[in-house]
Amino acid sequence: MKVIQISDCHLFTDINKIGYNHINPWQSLKRILTEVSSERPEVLLVTGDISGDGSLQSYQHFSRLLHEANLNCQIGIIPGNHDNQTYMQICICRDYLWLNKPQLQLPNQWHVHLLNTQHQATKGQISPESLTSLSKYVNTHSDDYHLVTAHHHPIFCGGWMDTHEWINRQAFNAVVAKYPAIKGVAYGHIHMAIEQHQNHCLYMACPATCWQFANQEYFAIEDLMPGFRVIKLLEDGQINTSTQRLTRHTSFCNT
Image (tube, rainbow, N blue to C red; front, side, top):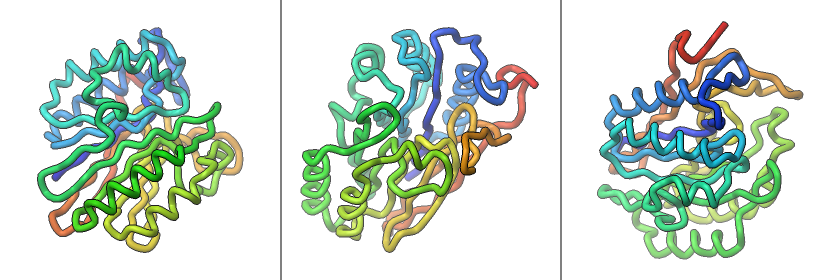
């Protein structure tokens, strides 16, 4: 079962606007979705920060690009700290959103959970109700396998993005540790690709579809290209994963 994760698109009202590292986020997302379509995934996960300016138009742009990509797969979308949930519901097919489909059930005993960690400014938090719901669901399906998605990073990355933290991540990680059936956690927010095992679980951070952050003490941009994560959910409960990045192209990266 092939799952592709994209994150942190940061689209603007103006599709010609250039952001960090001279990258046009609309153009880079368009190219990313072309690559994703060629991968023929069974599932596409979008882990937040679709918008960079919170505008209605940015979600219209996203919805149009997603439609043009002509993906024949399940799609799950959660909000990030920059997202406007009202505009998401207006512009994006509701069947894709965490509100109407908090879990995606896959045919090979895998379940994908879509969590909302949007809280205050750049910081994240998960509600006690969501944690209880996650625990009950996993406990009910304890003989199956589970992949949990969130926007904010549940484990520290060791750089400046840790100031934009998930403030009750310990409570979330306690749930993950309690249930061996939770095999993976996929997240965005930090604009970098990191993989780290904690006990039975693989934590996976996704590169952004626009600019990449450097994992340093103070704010910095990494000279890496936009990318996405490929997650293969195997029938024995194992996870194989890798990241792919675009090559330099003047249509979205002006140097």
